[in-house]
Every structure is written in C-alpha cells, then in structure tokens.
Length: 146
Image 1: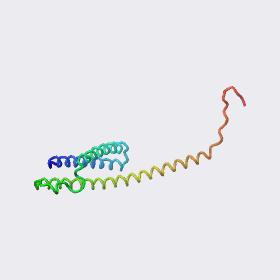
Image 2: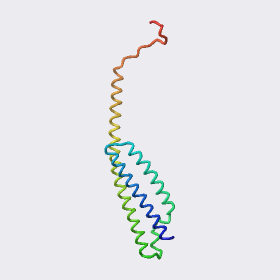
Image 3: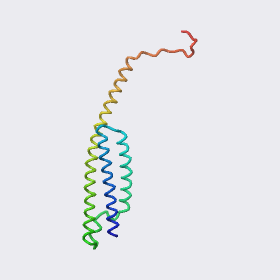
Image 4: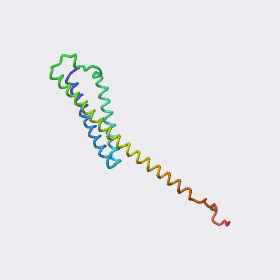
C-alpha cells in the first residue's frame, strides 16, 4: 500500500464530505422559509455525493479495522498527515450529523403542520358534505319532461 495513494484517497473523500456538508447547510436554510426546490435539489445532490463516497469506501476497504499505517514503516510525516486527514473526516461527519439532526427537527415540524392542515381540510369537507342536498335526478335527454 502506497501512502501517497492512501493520503490522496482520504483527501478526496474529505473534499466530498465537505461538499456534502455545504449541501446540507443549504438544505437547512431552505427549510426555514420552506423552499421545496432547494430541498429537492439538495437531496438529489446529497444522494449523488453519498454514492460517490460509498464507492470510494469500497475502493479503500483496506482502511477497515486497525489503521493500516500503524504496522507499516512509513515516514513519521506520512502517518501524521494521514491521521490528521482521518480526524478531519471525523469532524466533518460530526458536523454533518448535527446539521442532519437540525433538518430532521425542522422537517418534523413541517410534517406536523401539513398533517394538521390535511385533517382540518378533511373535517371541513365532511362538514360541507352534510349540508349538501340530494342531487336531483337530471333527465338523460333534454326533451324529456317529468
């Protein structure tokens, strides 16, 4: 395993995660005065970024478990740089979780508002239906008299 390839992959992943964080922030601002277009665009972009990150993770399977650099005789600078990059990735993931939690809270409030509006509309329709009279049987032909 070449440390430069590993470091390059980690930097690329960090860049994608930061881009995903900025998309999440844009979605969050789109939720406060609710803007459906901004939220849908954000969800689409996030899904695309998640797919790319998942593919990178599959390509870097050797990172699972114990850090591979702990047993290798790489120069100290490489190990420190890789460790720093991993810490940055962890920080971005924590920020993203915080942002996602805020989005979830706001979406829950919007969902409850829509649910209440639908219930009120349904109740209003049922009330109006009770005041409607029976429909008159209209003739099938106009020249028919009753």
